[in-house]
Length: 273
Length: 289
Image (tube, rainbow over all chains, first blue to last red; front, side, top):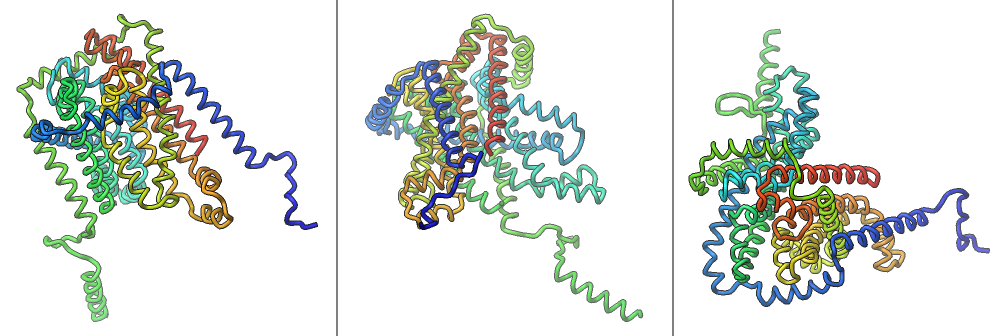
């Protein structure tokens, strides 16, 4: 009898890893299937219609959603709105990053200012992060009207909340050891910030800022739709006029813009990190 | 004795000039001049410059910013301090919240399925380079277009309602998850794949016995993160594309009824839901990861 062909005896009282894997897979599958069925019922969604709509959408897009000559003649207007949106995204991100950096200094464990202040700052940031930016946009619309400042502040509040969280995590991760060393030498708070925290965490912070610029350009389309400003409003205008050729050019311009910013940020990230 | 001290001193000086660089003012340089430091400086300057150009070029339409800011603060106080429902019922809001949750769940499930197969084609270690590059560029384009625009485009093709919302949200989720999953797959140890290949395992055996088990925890973490994003996106889509759910109620309260108190109540419900989801996904991630 060849020993190698014999199966290894099963250990008593211990299920094999394959059985556990199969069981957990079945459990997850059942959970997802239930969630799917319930969600379809609640949202009144039919999978058949959804699947049907994709080829229909592709055919429709190929026929109507292509820039024509009239759309090309609108390119200067689209590009100027796009430039405005991009500058807005950068301005919002830089301003919110400056505020967020200040607040994250109060919020990190690294600077050890006061546990209660730290907790308060985290809750404050969480508030701005979790109130949806469309609420900020609607609230600001009441007073600022259809103005670029409406978009600016709506994006600002949401970015601020996100960046405080990112910066606190970054500072705690990257700077804590050098801050400890500076504390040991008796450095003051400002010295710790300027000689320790900023130099060590700046590459990561810039990386987050670049990510946030990209994010804000995409989000400004949504805010623009709601507040009738910027590139989102331009898309909405063409879309409601059923001028899909021009609307498609807006979409293509946004995509090109976001992709070029993504490529540029990835290059910058590779050099600075 | 004195000579020795002088000799030591001169050695010290020559050593110093070798290892210590001084600035023009004669201070000791504490940071090395490197390419990355220069790039960092340049990036910061460029960002600040663009911000300045932005502020100078914006068309403010002569808005009275101080007055508007003051009334915004007053409005915010009404919004957050006196939340009250008058146009909707609590049951209606709860139902709308479930609809939004369902839209988020459906688009996450579809996105995860499509994202998984997309990632298999996109991950460089298990796919061929041409296919990988094609999928990569396709996905980058889909991700670059804002979710709301996908939903609006699909609304024309599929009609107003949950179908356009789910398919539109799925587009973006799938593209996002292809990138996230393929990065998780690229990070796995190549030894497991090679061992299975050497033993003559088929493609799907390699996928389900090596690739999935070693990257599943990262994939789940990304899926939960995407679910949170989809939930917030479903709110936005409801508001801007009329796709229903709590986002639509939010939009109606603010832009149709002009009721700050109503808006405040719904905002608190939404914020509580988002925080609960975040806590839940952190818990699940901790258990899985």
